[in-house]
Image (cartoon, rainbow, N blue to C red; front, side):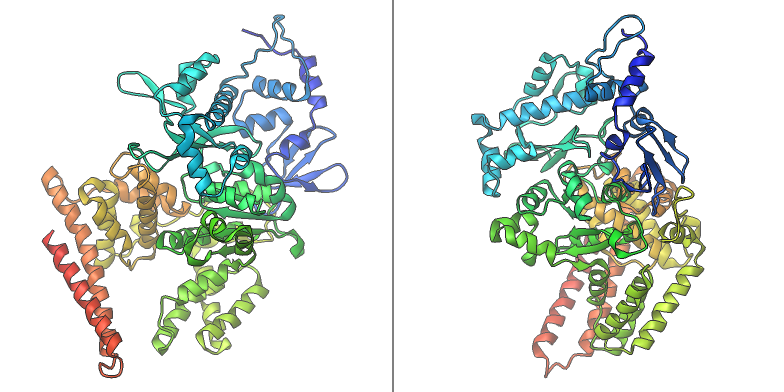
Length: 638
């Protein structure tokens, strides 16, 4: 085993490496005076840049959180490598031969992280080579049917995992990797008898790389009907792969994101490919999880997303969502985190519900470019979506719509923009702008008086310059929930779904997640459950020990404490038999309550409808009433 690296060699590497080049692979840096660069600190969340790099002296320092060091320290903190690994990696980069105190030479093995990356890199090369094999014809056909040729596959490193239990593992062992390294990297799995087998078999495979281009893991799509696994299978959490912190395509898009001050967030691997091939080279996608806070931090660092004295410093974040219910919920989650961006946020929805890949296939590259060019501001999208829930032909509907929309306008940071949206909202509602302005001001006062929003306002304020690391809002707790019967019913139903999902059953849990809730905090938990139910369809996590983790992943950070409490608080039933009866009973009650609400709304609309003048509408309402009543009857009979 090699000893300590000689100090002279360390100094030589440090002198040759440009720290700005290394840091710039993770953070977009901008000039900050003579000999200094600055960007958003990668070690704490901030809105204005306090992280400075001075290449001449090879150091970085954050005036917000106090992080400080040289290029080796930076790599240790960012990539969780040892000092020796950091030195060896940089030595290989600048061509310095290292020597050790005991006279040994640098080995090719730079430590655990480097070995795992090397294994993933070798696997990516193996998969890419297999794509031209006769067995990979279904994979090539899949790509061809979606408009991707061989050049496109090579550009994105797409490959094929043979329909074999050990082809990859045998290949990598032959290259010198150990079984432990392959299991740790997630490339192979181990069964109950201790035998290993390839994780990806008979699938089309995309390499998932970090911002520097290093392969950390893979996403794989099912190709064969006899494959009993999920449609998409990703690398599990490993020491180097964390799905909440990686974005597919970021290594290819980062330069244009930084230059063009725009990032386009799409939903899948083929969507990223379609966008890039169509000329939208700033597209990225999450890898088997919702776009969350950690993704925002990564995007902001690459985008150089911080407040400036003029609009030239503001970038664009464009989200593409499907128009279905899942897409709408994804839009709500993105909007909930909108204030974490200094950049302007937009939404692009393709016509006829087509995703970018299908849109390119059906209408060509121009259509994909027009999709992004035709984006709408996030606030306009959310306001119109909110107004669509109400009947604006009635005074009651307009007033209710104003109450629902006012907090959205109140949340706009830019005062001039907020004033403009007050006028727009007044026009959409057909109301006096002064009346709308009063409603928005009232919503703002209520938000300001909420002590739980103090930290949110602090971290979202453009005048904050990152003097302190941002802290997450404490969030609600069970003890803070109202004590009325309606809230207790909602609380208990969520407790049942979180604690005993197998007793509730997937179908009933889905119906609970679609019901209307009165308690605002519990509505957020319900939405997290709905999002988790949608995601676990791909990997059958519902009812397994990872179910709660999936719900927590989907929830906004301030609500994770409440979810944890709901998942721990004791259920009132103790025996095994009674627990099942109780859980299904309480879940059924919440669904039945929602159906009763729907019935009341339909009856009201029916009473307001002239049976003679609006015969067709009257008939439709009657049919809807019958359908709701039948559903209630079936629910009680289960």
